[in-house]
Length: 181
Image (tube, rainbow, N blue to C red; front, top):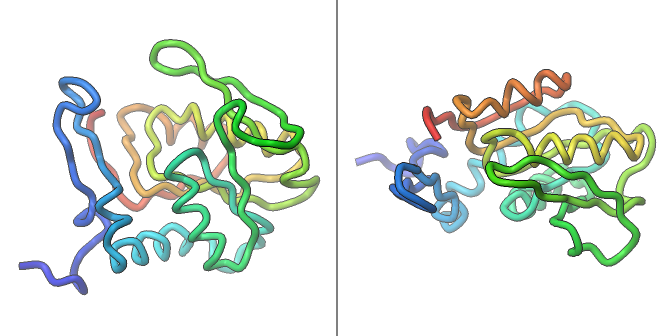
């Protein structure tokens, strides 16, 4: 039996076959969030490569990135910036569209969330195709800030997201890697 002192972040993640449709192995981080040791381990590992770097704020991608990003921001004593689906933020925003498997989606950020020269860390639970993260990076850069890195709990490298973000010259950190979709 693995004790909590020996567990890795991956040990806290549940895999659900055939969700949301047949052939997909869904990596469920809610079991990670439910366990205080697992959640703490994930937050510590998300921020560890960025300790010592200048970070002005942490941005989280909707929705699980809010949970993780808020915790990372708290640990760093920095502010948190939500990047949300269109129509969810109350003040003036800028928006960015991105491609989905079937169609497009739009994310927004408040137009005063970050400023020129700010250093921002983006956090989310999963890196797949990289479309949402790419849109988040674009929004932050349009406001004149710099993305110093992106941190994810899970990377699905076969879907190309890491390569997409690294081609934008953004460092990518992921705690766990899973083959396939």
